[in-house]
Length: 261
Image 1 (cartoon, helix red, strand yellow):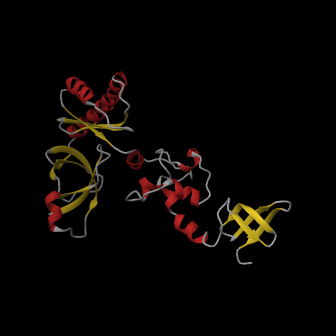
Image 2: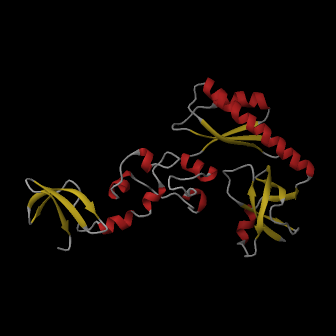
Image 3: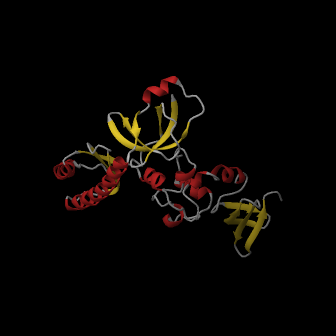
C-alpha cells in the first residue's frame, strides 16, 4: 500500500492529511475520500516516502476513488452553490443584526453538510440563522467561528513589508505578541503601523524583541532623569545600536552621551 499526503481543496481551514491507497497516485490528482463519515474531494500533494507511525494510519481518511469527470463537475457545482450560500448567510446575518463576518463556505462532496466559516469579536447566538439556512438549503448546516489570525493564515496576503504573510508562508504556530514589544523597540504606537492585516499586532514584533532587550542593557529609558558630566538632564532619545543616548540639559541644550564613555 502507498501513502499520500493530500489537501482538501474546499475546506481551507482543515490541515493536510494522509491517505493510503493501492494505486500509485500522481501529484495534483483529484480523489474522493471519506473523512469521519464526511465525503470530501482532495488533491494529492505527493507520495510519502518516509514511513509513518502505525498508530497514525488509524486516523487516515479512507480512499474511495480517483475523481471522475462527473465528480469534477459536481465539485464545480458545489463551489458555485456554496459561494451563493455564503452571500445569503451574510445577508441574513445583517437582517438579524448579528455581528459576523463570513469568510468561506463549502459543501461536503455528497452535499450532506454545508460548512460556513466566520469571524466575530464576541460570542454569537446564530440559532435563528442556522435554522433559516437549513430551511433554504435542505441540508445540515455547521457554522464555525475562526480567529482573525487563523483567517489571515489560511487566506494569505501581503504584509506592510511587501512580503507574503509570515503566518501563511512559514509560521507553524502563533507566538504571543504584546504592545510592550512595540514600546521596547521604540515604535510609534499607531495601529496602522504595528498591526497586521488581521487587525492584531504584527507577529514580527516578536522576532527582534530579545535583541532590543539585550542591546538596551546599560542604557536609560526615554524620559529618565540622568546625571551627566554636563549636569542633570532628561533622556530624549536612545540609539541602541550605537550605544548612545541624548539628554536635554537646562541652559545647555541637547548633549549626546556614549555608554562606554
